[in-house]
Image (cartoon, rainbow over all chains, first blue to last red; front, side, top):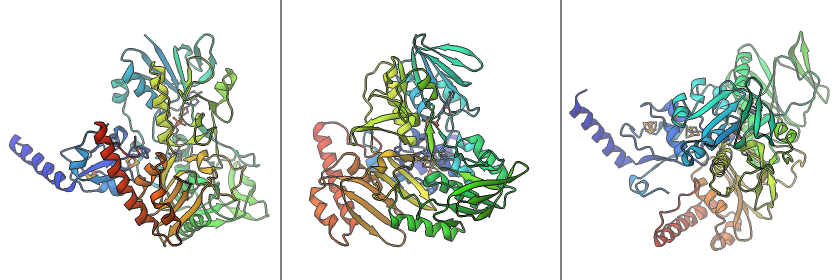
Length: 89
Length: 452
Ligand SMILES: Cc1cc2nc3c(=O)[nH]c(=O)nc-3n(C[C@H](O)[C@H](O)[C@H](O)COP(=O)(O)OP(=O)(O)OC[C@H]3O[C@@H](n4cnc5c(N)ncnc54)[C@H](O)[C@@H]3O)c2cc1C
Ligand code: SF4
Ligand code: SF4
């Protein structure tokens, strides 16, 4: 893939994620079962984000919602980007 | 250079190792565990059994993660502890010296004393080796009997059913998990189980497991019935692994007793996770839990203290969100049942706090698929069960965990037919706004709910 195409693609998904929000974990109930990572079509290790309690700020996330829908413990949710950009303690 | 030794490779052990490494870049950290597979998601075993994930997905850490943390993981069994010499004895490798020791030995499934319990085909869902064994046997089995209350018994029943084994589920009393759920909630779960094809047998206890040539062929119940089966799944409770500690003279009760710094009564020896019995300030007593997030929190606190940072462990309200017969269910705080069986022990994914009988009035709202039960105290919410729609859980958990004064909505919550969901959602938005302004005025970042 050429460089400009990669850059353009990243920009596209960034914009899209900005419109849709980002996936945010609540790690107080995550049990690291891996169902989220297993079902992510892009192969993002969602579980690791949940362990670290960080929003999934991966340019490749297509915000398809698979991880959110499949997590058996309601750990993941979409949040508008504006809020998640606030500093997290 | 400080030498840290951690017994166990579960989540409490791994969380402790991370916390130590954050504060001590040079000390040596050794994790000793007797399971060949090392660290994996124990609650994930239920989803491996249903077939939702392959075995490889159970491992949250790769070798590279342990290398990055400079943690050595050793597969061995710790057989003895010599506190005076500050060393532990490994079955194969001999003595290993420590400056700080963490006991994160977890709990094991309780084994009943029924005749026939050693037959091939009697299974538990306790570790990865067990789960592989269940999956192997389920390929040939046509029928199974599952015994026990709580989450793991149900996970066994659902997992076997998903593998096309016909399941008989035996319940000692008149309904499912009566220590924690109320009658409406139990019925909802039981209805779903029946729809899934699982056969429930109330007031039924095992007298004997029947076998032929060393293998299970059935179960004889105390009322004299015989249920034919090739598998018997047992999840009747757990026992914290306290033997190592007890033999070394560490103070134990049902678990290893620790203070708010996760220290045992012996110097430089700590305990965390399912094995630790931790003081709960609200109940005023030491309690056991079998909850992954709490085991992690305790591991983190123990690790920090082992590395020399004196930080007390703040016990958060026990919360579990899980699926019961496909219904997502959150249980938090004190939700105990007055008619509960007082002798019933702890099971996996459970907390002794949930048993506590709150001094509370009940508010309940249910429709066919969604259900909320609130334990309303004098000024705060003490506990809740939410089945189905989980959108309220984060807010509810914060209200309970932070003991937010609910006086503004208390009367309305307790009114007959109160719209609990709407009242809570509106109140939660107000509280959130309030928390944010308070934080902004402090100059500190806004509080993050539930997770910390
Ligand atoms: C089927 C199932 C479902 C569950 N569901 C939930 C749930 O819904 N929600 C939830 O929050 N929690 C759930 N849990 C509970 C959760 O898994 C535990 O709370 C958590 O794993 C405890 O972590 P731990 O590190 O304290 O102990 P463990 O994970 O038990 O790890 C302890 C380790 O120490 C090792 N060990 C013990 N003694 C020695 C020794 N002498 N030498 C060497 N090694 C030793 C053991 O082999 C084990 O590997 C579930 C558990 C199971 C099995
Ligand atoms: S599916 Fe949910 S519980 Fe499982 S690892 Fe992912 S976020 Fe955690
Ligand atoms: S939203 Fe979709 S692409 Fe993004 S992390 Fe979740 S599963 Fe992966």
